[in-house]
Length: 275
Length: 286
Image (tube, rainbow over all chains, first blue to last red; front, side):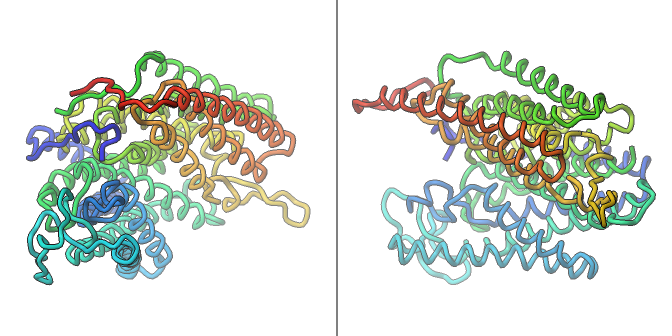
């Protein structure tokens, strides 16, 4: 579903030189933080892991795009960036609410929030597909559902790539929400630790610092989440059915790319309290 | 490598639009700084104008990028633009500690660095292999950061970090500094973020198609920008004097009304051109 009907880009395989440069960018970012503000080294690594979790998680989400809205492709009928933002931000809000209870509960709350949103979305998408559009769930990429063993070819309409939301895609969507929500919450939590520690000494007061730290960490987490999600969307180029789709095998390069992007964005977010 | 498909013929060259966008936005942002020099707030609306100029240029960047077929739809480019732009903008606002005059120009440089890295990642690491990708993602990051900077300057009358985190509330008739009642503490930034994101991702997404025309898309960009500016003007009630808010609001309403009526005229013109049904015009590509 490219904008103007042009052929979607995005070849297979990993570009070794570029991936090496991306890893060097990660190391440089970590080294810079280690030199100028060693206390933020662990948070930066947390931010990078958060970006990697988001990027890996987005690959699970069944994205159908415009063809899915017309019942010509399986998946949820919207773009990768929108779905990831929905699931991830729901997780982020859930996790942010639980931030005061420590990292484990916060991450769990974030994961549940993201997973819950994707579960409800997938359920309602299937209700609309089955009862409103009158189409059965059939995958175009595999003949048999890897979990339930349902067969698809007999139900797939001619001229389509499949339609509806098979069970494996549903499971993929929930898994994607879990990873995305956890990643977004991890970025938020780590940045919150940095700001709560650094802002009072920078401004010389503790009054209202929590609000400020929450706002700064929140807006940075949203920004980084969208960067990681859109880069992953570019990696997928359009539609994906879930973990059984051949495009799922592209995840390593999205993980490399997102770790470099999160490292650069995290570096600037942390340097904010240094200069 | 993907094939380029010309979106629309004619119109201004992209490099000229880049020049107008950068210079226009910078000039408007430096005019906002007159607020601090003259201790007034009436120049706040120039921040909104800076954001609209940046959005006008950014719409053409999105058009250039998306004419290669990203496969993910137009809005994703708008989301990465604002997502990376907000990081560059917040970092740049902190540069005011060195010199306030450094903020707008520093914002452009930092956004260019972040954008170039993100563009390199999407083009080479993710194997998109689109020739203009690195440049356009860098441009979009600059547009996103200038939009955030412009709208933030409009809502608070300043783009200096220490001003953005300190608001004031009156308590028993006394003005008390409150960090919670500030632009960043009150998380007004989140609203500005989405207002900017809608304004950048909508115009080309709405106008694309075989009969897309340059002036209609750019007018839609102006219309979306002024509409966001109108909401920002209403939000600035919390931070600015009533006189400055009324000026911002009046200018936003007038400009939005003008751009909306122009956009409707252009839409009617393009619709009339398609009055008799014709085969879809092939404008290039394969």
